[in-house]
Amino acid sequence: MNKKLLTLTLLLFVGLGAVHAQLGKLIGGGKASKKSGNFKTVWESEFANKANRLAMTNQEGTFILGTDDNSATVLDGDGKQLWEGDFKKITTNKTNNSEFQYYIKSNDGGYLFLFDSRKLGTDRVAVINVKTGKEMWNSENYQNLLSKDGGPVETVNYINELDAFMIAQKDGLNMVKAKTGEKIWETKLFKGSIGKYVYDRSKNEIVMINYKPTALAALFSGFKNQLVKINAANGEILWDATFRGTIEKKLVSREALVNLDIKGNKVFLWLDGLQCFNLDNGQKVWEVEYENDMSKSSSILGNRSKKGIYGTLANPIFTKDAVYIVIFANRSRTKYVEKHDLETGKLIWASEKIAGAFSMPHIYRTNNRVMVQVGGKVEVQEIETRRTSSGVETEYKIYTDYINQKNGILSLDDNTGQTVWRSERFDKRITDMIINEDKTVFVGDGDEFYAYDIESGKQLFDVKHNDARVGKATDVIDFGEIVVVLSEKGLASYKKADGKRVYATDKLPDVDFFYEIGGNYFLRNQKNSKNVIYGVDMTNGAIKGKVESKGKGGSERYGDGIDITDDGEFIFAFKGKKVEKIKVNN
Image: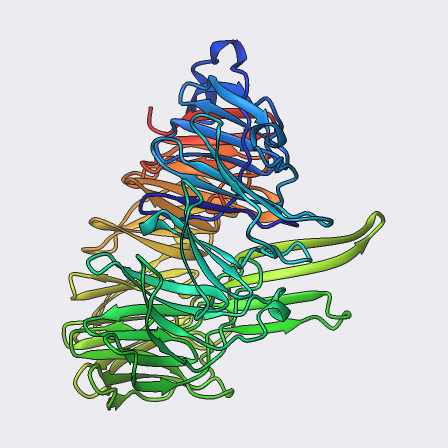
């Protein structure tokens, strides 16, 4: 993690990662039918280089890319090498030691963006066609894109809808065609990096906000907070507004802690509260101010450890005439829900205050009730630096955890905000709520699983989840007629109708994430420096197979050494020069 990797796709999903490509050899034409757990290996192959920077596939698994700092290899869907080469030989401007790389996925292969930060001389940029291995364009016009401490890149954004890069420079913003490098426009009226944007295809307009890149702050001396609407065709600023607050970034992933949304003729900015602007002219219409969703702490050992806690406040809920907001009132950890008129921002009602509620991560509006979840999982990002016998070692962690607080669920009257009923019988491992047909809410804690009637609060059933012998519950998955409870050591599922257990799996240690991809479900264990992916049949709990990665450079979504096709049918496992294509469904 010394160098930030960033991966992009051309279709709906935009993910983060980084890759550098050179093609490899097929081992014996591909070894078929080898089993990986219960999975079957379609083939094994090799990259010509050692893929330790990027090791990824495109959406369909028809192009497989492996890179290091200086070279790339690309295989086809059968594991056969398409090309391999050194960057300095492929690029005409001799781009070589590429600290920063984008892999832009597409069905025709996509392309690889390289940035070579030179200590003595001019920084270089080059883009390579992943299908052909040929240079598409290069440039030496863009400088100071990387932080000097090797941190994440905050000056380059890929705009998926326009297939273009937005590149921030100290004197303004440039839009560049991703395929050709042609500068579409530049504006000196917008400075800083893009924190968030919304693209309007019908008008070819972008609404976006900026922030000052942390490590390059000195270069942006004329910086000011800007919310702008811009003509995407020529860079004309249609209006420019100033927003209140400072955009913070997550500690490890550096994701900007801000949300931007357009509802009708209004722009809503969620930053230190909710700010509403007129979409036509940028005038501020109204705002509700409250504290931001972030908590940082440092250890007492010379500030060598830093921690950020995220996801403690639910996102606002919008209806056609109102918005519901979880308010963090002050540093006494008092929280409550407010309902505001969408047009004027006028307060319609405020719920009771809930003291000591560090986390209120979810609210739902259903018929004439607003369901509120108090407590639950939060995201933790941590940087730990320690001295070892070989020097200083830094570890980056992203995981989920629970905050010790009084947990429960509340049902509020949508007309008045009054509490109709509440339940506080949950331990600190309260799960997220599942709302079923606007009538029933399912929620659990470490040892039990409950169902309530939303209207009356009547408890419909209480299941002793610890009887399933899969450990304490950590999450819930809505799956048709059942609710699947993800637990520390496996899965257990219960019928929505009566709470009867459908199945419990064999033990799966330390499962902490799940993914639904194209109707396929996967579980992940990333504890103790592992990265294990399980395939699971949610109908009966059968484990289809298991892949344990020991490689580097996989998708950030699935972790080092792993990538999965967009239909969820194939897993790619990477380890240095080796790559294995694994079939999920036999």
